[in-house]
Length: 342
Ligand code: NAP
Image 1 (cartoon, helix red, strand yellow):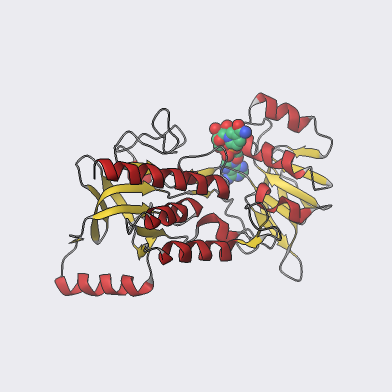
Image 2: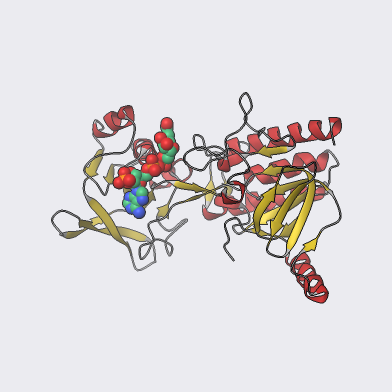
């Protein structure tokens, strides 16, 4: 099964679904209960939409992703989410959001949505085993940061030196040397942001020209703390005796030479992949695969009753708080639409 979008529920319900499906010997089980709203994804956007729709007494069904809690669960401490002067553990924050929505009646389930039908009054969501029906849908499936797929990267990801978010983790590398990998706007933005904290930022790019916009290129090349290492790929993230990043091994693609660069932080900024495959051909996507909201709105789509929130529709801000804000907006729009049309 291609897990283009993976949604996970509580284990109890998952077992129940599996048992019922095998008893019936049916490939597809249709949930006859028409849901008021189904929320796809459990990052900040999905949970916030769940809190708002649950408090509006809509009893949302929330289908969790294959990364329940979203990207914040991969970072140790979140210092820029308002309301936590001492910072907050990303995993704990998501657990609290989950509980907060459940307190008002949100229900969670675990399934992999592969295909959607939004053309009729009833919105249908298909997984391999099940078909869900709903009056409205809030899509908050997030985006997954692209990784390099090299040794040491996953082992040291999130708290041990490898990260994909300078805004989230940059401050932990104060007065240290770090590297950023990539040559696009994200990589330049991350590198420039990191100069606020770090003594030196090496930008490792695989070509001899940056892909980023001209202004970002100028700022990056003109910054005294940033050194661009051209025509170079990272082959491995190297660990110290405690399992924390101590450096990287790089390969110069022109000369074939390898060398090590000492650094405590490795910021991978080679783009994101929005989790929007099930919506291809159904909703409008931009050239990078992000869901495009309808003109004049951040969260409405061209289909009435279908809303978007968070990183699956936002490649500009990509923050926990902005995703939460979009989740709130989507929920309010959804609630108003259901009151009028549903
Ligand atoms: P991007 O433009 O796709 O750039 C990705 C960069 O990573 C490219 O330089 C690419 O190298 C490199 N790369 C990709 N795979 C790699 C690999 N396996 N190993 C090494 N390097 C690899 O992604 P992005 O920078 O995240 O930007 C995405 C979109 O968001 C863009 O449209 C961008 O303009 C926009 N954005 C805008 C802003 C802003 O306006 N402030 C900020 C961030 C992003 P090559 O160049 O060789 O392909």
